[in-house]
Image (cartoon, rainbow, N blue to C red; front, side, top):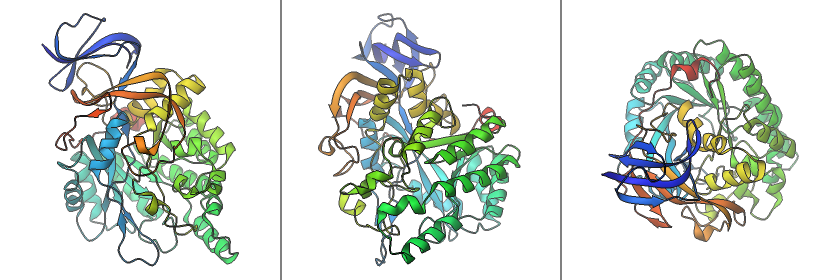
Length: 474
């Protein structure tokens, strides 16, 4: 007897959509067959009239991340994996990727172990880590990096800017990036890049402060489209000179970043783009709304012409993934800064992401269900080395399954969500919402009831396939 059957739904399979039943045993998808053909099961979910997709994957979140505020010695910290992962499962996301800060006062292995201690037995869903390289990379760290990547940490994160004045220690110089890319390529990984031109960004901070235009509503002048153009092109051309180097450009925010990615992909290089639902649905004008800080993340929100380019790029273009840059904290923390140099980046968005993107893509723009599922799940799984274990409704894959009720008119309210006391999506109407979320065969949420246990979440060792690193394969 099967453990679980999802019956009668419109299922988004790797081969396309089909009305089929999915049978699960031992945490894996065991069989896919015609409606009514799978026989008895311990538990059956009737998905008739609903859409069934692979569990969502958010490859860009920040749990227990320090938020430093000028004048305060001790940082505040974003909310823990337990809170974020619970919200993720309510919203149809079953896998998260966070970050290990590879500081210079400890080995990379120690950094991994100390980070994992905050996740192991403390996360409801599955998780992995990017390894964030910091500042001037010690020579010995390259060997440590290679070992860690071989052990399943298949991606690194690099900043080309310190983001804010006085926030030193993040930016990696281009020579060190070059060397790191050689290590990552040899180890078979991918490099996630936060790319802004530090000279331009810091110059604009100085300029606006000198002119006493320090309100956060001027953020798009600091973290501007020229900065994205210069930094994207520079790091992409660097990677093009390293055989086997693949880049994943995080939170693409501007038309200039889209153009740089598209040009490299047209030259045949394995460049991939991530944008955020914030950039697709909000612009710099939203900073002028009451509490406008809640819409901000770094780099800044941009302009309507950038939104247009980003949407075009999600339509089988230079953008393959829509993530959140999740930073879950109370509203009082999110609003604590009001200047260009102290506004908190990131915001809570992991729970409504899948439903918002279904609404924007399928309902409003006519994207296919396969395309939508790719943008919120399958493409990230492929690029980050989790596919087909994750991101696929296929025999042998982990039974990470989401049943979406569609054709709705549901208004998002913070009081109905499970992240924190606010949502930047307050009042938005969505046309789909998860009614069932399954993680490795266990029903974690059904009909608004939660059945997860903090021991359910498992670490995801990852290995990026050669084809992902050889050409723009997604």
